[in-house]
Image (cartoon, rainbow, N blue to C red):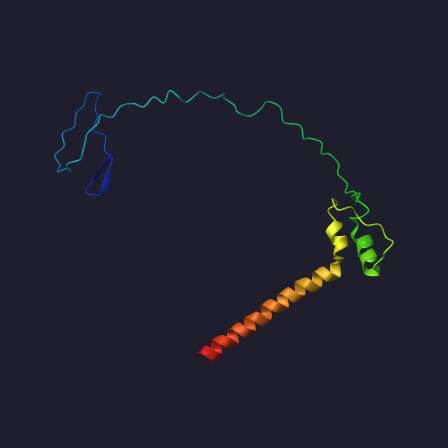
Length: 140
Protein backbone atom coordinates (compact mmCIF):
# COMPACT_ATOMS: atom_id res chain seq x y z
CA UNK A 1 0.00 0.00 0.00
CA UNK A 2 1.36 3.42 -0.84
CA UNK A 3 0.61 6.86 -2.23
CA UNK A 4 1.79 7.92 -5.68
CA UNK A 5 1.09 11.44 -6.96
CA UNK A 6 -1.68 11.86 -4.38
CA UNK A 7 -3.48 8.63 -5.27
CA UNK A 8 -3.37 5.49 -3.13
CA UNK A 9 -2.44 2.16 -4.70
CA UNK A 10 -2.57 -1.35 -3.28
CA UNK A 11 -0.81 -4.13 -5.11
CA UNK A 12 0.64 -7.39 -3.89
CA UNK A 13 4.22 -7.67 -5.17
CA UNK A 14 5.17 -10.54 -2.88
CA UNK A 15 5.16 -13.86 -4.60
CA UNK A 16 7.39 -15.27 -1.92
CA UNK A 17 8.55 -14.04 1.45
CA UNK A 18 11.89 -12.92 -0.02
CA UNK A 19 10.45 -10.85 -2.89
CA UNK A 20 11.91 -7.43 -3.54
CA UNK A 21 10.47 -4.43 -5.29
CA UNK A 22 12.46 -1.84 -7.16
CA UNK A 23 10.78 1.51 -7.53
CA UNK A 24 12.04 4.69 -9.17
CA UNK A 25 10.61 7.94 -7.84
CA UNK A 26 11.63 11.48 -6.99
CA UNK A 27 11.25 11.88 -3.23
CA UNK A 28 11.62 14.85 -0.91
CA UNK A 29 14.88 15.22 1.04
CA UNK A 30 13.28 14.21 4.38
CA UNK A 31 12.05 10.86 3.11
CA UNK A 32 13.13 7.66 4.88
CA UNK A 33 12.46 4.01 4.22
CA UNK A 34 11.71 1.42 6.89
CA UNK A 35 11.09 -2.30 6.53
CA UNK A 36 7.56 -3.60 6.96
CA UNK A 37 7.49 -6.22 9.71
CA UNK A 38 4.77 -8.22 11.44
CA UNK A 39 3.32 -6.52 14.46
CA UNK A 40 2.55 -9.36 16.84
CA UNK A 41 0.54 -7.27 19.35
CA UNK A 42 1.68 -9.45 22.23
CA UNK A 43 0.12 -7.00 24.68
CA UNK A 44 -3.38 -8.05 23.59
CA UNK A 45 -4.71 -10.77 25.88
CA UNK A 46 -6.91 -13.64 24.86
CA UNK A 47 -10.56 -13.47 25.86
CA UNK A 48 -13.00 -16.17 26.82
CA UNK A 49 -14.78 -17.85 23.97
CA UNK A 50 -18.19 -16.66 25.18
CA UNK A 51 -18.32 -13.34 27.08
CA UNK A 52 -21.93 -13.87 28.18
CA UNK A 53 -22.82 -15.71 31.42
CA UNK A 54 -24.32 -19.18 31.17
CA UNK A 55 -27.32 -18.25 33.31
CA UNK A 56 -29.60 -15.34 32.67
CA UNK A 57 -29.18 -12.65 35.35
CA UNK A 58 -31.91 -12.31 37.95
CA UNK A 59 -33.89 -9.08 37.87
CA UNK A 60 -33.15 -7.17 41.10
CA UNK A 61 -35.93 -6.33 43.51
CA UNK A 62 -36.42 -2.59 43.67
CA UNK A 63 -36.60 -0.88 47.04
CA UNK A 64 -39.89 0.84 47.75
CA UNK A 65 -39.96 4.58 48.20
CA UNK A 66 -42.55 6.84 49.69
CA UNK A 67 -42.23 10.57 50.17
CA UNK A 68 -42.56 11.84 53.70
CA UNK A 69 -43.26 15.34 54.89
CA UNK A 70 -40.05 16.79 56.34
CA UNK A 71 -39.93 17.57 60.04
CA UNK A 72 -39.24 21.31 59.93
CA UNK A 73 -37.96 23.25 62.87
CA UNK A 74 -40.72 25.33 64.46
CA UNK A 75 -39.16 28.54 63.13
CA UNK A 76 -38.58 27.15 59.60
CA UNK A 77 -42.25 26.44 58.90
CA UNK A 78 -42.99 29.05 56.23
CA UNK A 79 -46.75 29.24 56.84
CA UNK A 80 -46.32 29.74 60.59
CA UNK A 81 -43.53 32.27 60.04
CA UNK A 82 -45.57 34.32 57.54
CA UNK A 83 -48.58 34.40 59.88
CA UNK A 84 -46.51 35.54 62.84
CA UNK A 85 -44.64 38.18 60.83
CA UNK A 86 -47.81 39.55 59.23
CA UNK A 87 -49.50 39.83 62.64
CA UNK A 88 -46.38 41.49 64.08
CA UNK A 89 -46.73 39.30 67.14
CA UNK A 90 -44.64 40.75 70.00
CA UNK A 91 -45.18 37.77 72.31
CA UNK A 92 -44.33 35.12 69.71
CA UNK A 93 -41.08 33.23 70.32
CA UNK A 94 -38.17 34.32 68.13
CA UNK A 95 -35.26 32.12 67.02
CA UNK A 96 -31.82 32.56 68.56
CA UNK A 97 -29.18 34.46 66.59
CA UNK A 98 -27.43 31.20 65.52
CA UNK A 99 -30.62 29.90 63.87
CA UNK A 100 -30.72 30.07 60.02
CA UNK A 101 -34.12 31.82 60.11
CA UNK A 102 -33.03 34.49 62.63
CA UNK A 103 -32.58 37.28 60.06
CA UNK A 104 -35.90 36.42 58.45
CA UNK A 105 -37.65 37.07 61.75
CA UNK A 106 -35.46 40.01 62.79
CA UNK A 107 -36.00 41.84 59.47
CA UNK A 108 -39.61 40.63 59.12
CA UNK A 109 -39.04 39.13 55.67
CA UNK A 110 -42.22 37.50 54.38
CA UNK A 111 -42.97 35.87 51.06
CA UNK A 112 -44.96 38.93 49.97
CA UNK A 113 -42.09 41.27 50.88
CA UNK A 114 -39.66 39.15 48.89
CA UNK A 115 -41.90 39.20 45.80
CA UNK A 116 -42.39 42.97 46.14
CA UNK A 117 -38.61 43.48 46.21
CA UNK A 118 -38.19 41.22 43.21
CA UNK A 119 -40.87 43.08 41.23
CA UNK A 120 -39.38 46.45 42.23
CA UNK A 121 -36.00 45.28 40.89
CA UNK A 122 -37.61 44.22 37.59
CA UNK A 123 -39.42 47.57 37.31
CA UNK A 124 -36.20 49.48 38.06
CA UNK A 125 -34.35 47.64 35.28
CA UNK A 126 -37.20 48.34 32.85
CA UNK A 127 -37.24 52.08 33.60
CA UNK A 128 -33.44 52.24 33.31
CA UNK A 129 -33.66 50.55 29.90
CA UNK A 130 -36.31 53.02 28.70
CA UNK A 131 -34.19 55.95 29.92
CA UNK A 132 -31.14 54.58 28.12
CA UNK A 133 -33.06 54.24 24.83
CA UNK A 134 -34.45 57.77 25.15
CA UNK A 135 -30.95 59.13 25.84
CA UNK A 136 -29.58 57.33 22.75
CA UNK A 137 -32.43 58.75 20.62
CA UNK A 138 -31.71 62.25 22.00
CA UNK A 139 -27.99 61.91 21.24
CA UNK A 140 -28.64 60.73 17.67
